[in-house]
Structure formats: C-alpha cells, structure tokens
Image (cartoon, rainbow, N blue to C red):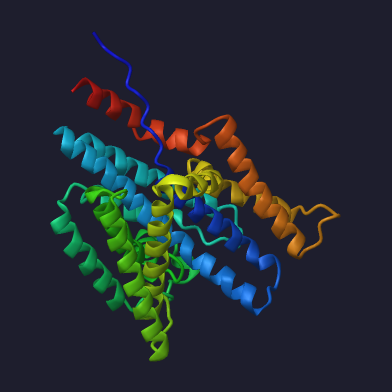
Length: 345
C-alpha cells in the first residue's frame, strides 16, 4: 500500500528572509531613476548591500536543511546532490538569458549559481568540517585582490574570462564573496536554524562582523569590493537580518503572533523569489525603453516599478502558488523524481 507524500510545510522565517532579500534588490534597482537626498541615499545603499549576501546565506540554509533531513533519514545522497547541481546550472542559464535584456541591473544569478554548484558537493559535510571551510574561504576571499578588474567586454565570451569574472573579478558579485556566506548558511541549516542557540550565535557573528566593519572604517582601510570593510559589512548585514527575522518568526505569545503576521507578505514573495527577480527585468525594460507619456523619468517610475514588481509577485504567490521559474527549475532539475525516490525508500 502507498500513501501520498504530505507537501513539506513552508518555513516562515526562511521564506521571509528570502522575501526581504528580493524586496531589497527591487528597491536597489529602482535607485537609478532618482537622486536621493543624503540619508535616503545611504539607506538605499545599505539595502542594496544586503540583498545578495542574504540570498547566498538563505540558499545555504535551505541546502543545509535538506542535507540534515537526508542524513537523519539515512537516505541516498547523490540524487539530492545531482538535483542541487542541475538547479545551480539552471540558475546560471537564467542569469545569462537575463543579461540579454540589457538593463542597468547587474545580474547576480551566475555567481549565485556557481556558488550553489560548489555548495552542492559540500552540503553533506559535517558541521565541524564546514565551519573551518567557511572560515578558510572567507580568508581566501579577503586575499583576492581582483574584484573590480573585469576583463574587457570583448573577452566576456571566452569561457576562461567568464569564469574569471564570476569567480574572482566582478565588482558586484563573485563566487569568492558569496561562497563563505553560503557555507555559513549550510552550517546554520545543518545544526537547526530555528534553535534559539543557533540564532544567537548567528547574531553574534553578525555583531562581531559589524564591529570589524566599524574598526576598518575607523582605520581607513580600503573600501574596494571584496576587501575587509566590504566583506565584514556584507557578513554583518546578512547575519543580523537573518537572525532577527528567524527570531521574530519563532517568537512566543503575542509578540510572535504580531511578528508572524508582519512577516507573511515578505514570506509570500519569498516563495516566488526567482520569478520576482526575473520580473524586474521585464518591468524595467518596459518602463525605461517604452515609458508611458504620463510617467516622466524620476521618482514616479521608481515607485511604479517597486510597487508593481512586489504586488504582482505577492498576488501570484497568494492566488496561484509556485512561481513559473520555480516550477520550471524544480521540474528540470528532477526534484519530483528525488522526492518520489526518497518516499519509496
């Protein structure tokens, strides 16, 4: 006799953190439409800096949770590794397609996909091995002096230069910058991201990184991409925000009830984050190249862009469910086959 597999419950804290990452990215991508005053400009800068590190951390936590479940059930690991690896390649392909929209958005999916591809083969390592690996990759990232030295555009089509850019030298997003955060996320997922002790330690890592960032600023250290100030800033932002969001999602009594209600819109958007990310390019292409006559270049199209992207994503998640790109990557990477095989065993 067989029974239908119960669909896995969504994790509010994890979905909300992913949703906040995409919200941060959408807001940051609207910034070129207008010149913000000093304080607002700094706030948008912080929001922009939060997005990709938080994405990498959340991806790592998700991988860690899956690995934890597989290990606990004593199930075969290679089907899951293959699924994650194929999905990572699909992220890279989608990123390359989005580049063809030729917008002002620096596409993050290629380095995120490379990060997830490497992560697929280490996600089953024990936490005591993952922790030193995460520290080592972070130190190696600090030693990388290549960010901001991308090859000329004419060289981008050569495979070696493509890897050079997205692994080492891109001034926005690089595997060397994202992999340590992904590995930190895997550790958090493997030990249990809802445990209060784990969240306190994650928060402590973020606070320590913030202190390191402030010290680097005070000592006038280099603020170039990938250097101490930039790296500690990214680590501080994503670790603190992730810990606070997950604490709020798991808070007890009345406080928890209010915080969970507040997090649900972001969590819904987080369930369709990949589709929402791609939607930005379509909206941006229309609003920049074919703007309505009643929408002059300035803050108004920025508001329309942010509002439309987030509202459409929220409505899709609430009324339809899984996003189109989420469905496509899930099917093409064989997720349903992996689940059926796990259920059978």
